[in-house]
Length: 299
Image 1 (cartoon, rainbow, N blue to C red):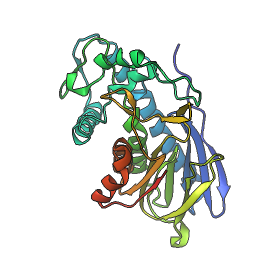
Image 2 (image 1 turned 180 degrees about the vertical axis):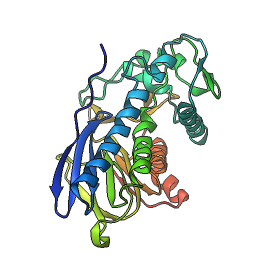
Image 3 (image 1 turned 90 degrees about the vertical axis):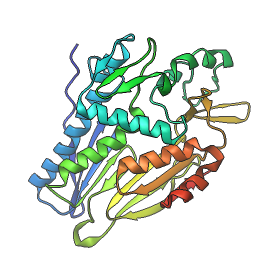
Image 4 (image 1 turned 120 degrees about the vertical axis):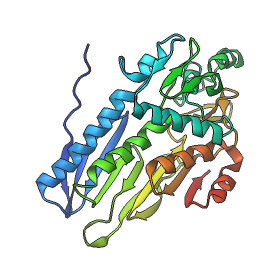
């Protein structure tokens, strides 16, 4: 069955600007457009939504027939990828190296043991250990444009896809209007200020129950990305298990902050730093301080 076409974004007036909303990558997405006429606002939102849906269709591990599905069902055969996919795989390889193996796009198979649904269903050590032989970027043969996975292994680009989508959509939107804020599921980028130079005010969600805003940040140009376990965790015998897994052990990273938000020039860079920080566990703040970036960590 062919995938259903994405619903048309909804556009409404917000003060002197516009708000476009749509769903993509299993996340609510927003495009805020500063002072502009209706036709311009419609064009900006349509461009951003189309790019988000294109990237989702191409790289989602849930879609059949795309490049990720071709890789994951190759059963040991080499797969030749296009230039865009090659760039993402090069980036994944770089992150694997920078993190000493803690960031690994082959670790998605661990979801077969872990279901972070807020319950107390923690998997057994045996269930996790059984999956480790099919986890590890070091087991992959990658020489652009050819990728070969051992049988049973998979790649999952979800850890970098949403931030990449924000940056890619922003690049397409910029020639139409620079007074925009793109927010894809909490990963966002401002192309410029609102009308009159006012910044965009964005909130960092509290890790306490209820999801209230912990603080507000004024953003004029640049990106923010957040990684955390506020919605994806397990809780058993008084212990919380966050969804950020160490692919080398198959178990959640110990002593990681509940949430890390990083400011950077691009959403991809911000997301990379937020994720790598969480993977440092108790050393997350020290890692980010060493990068000389602005960040907010909540425990």
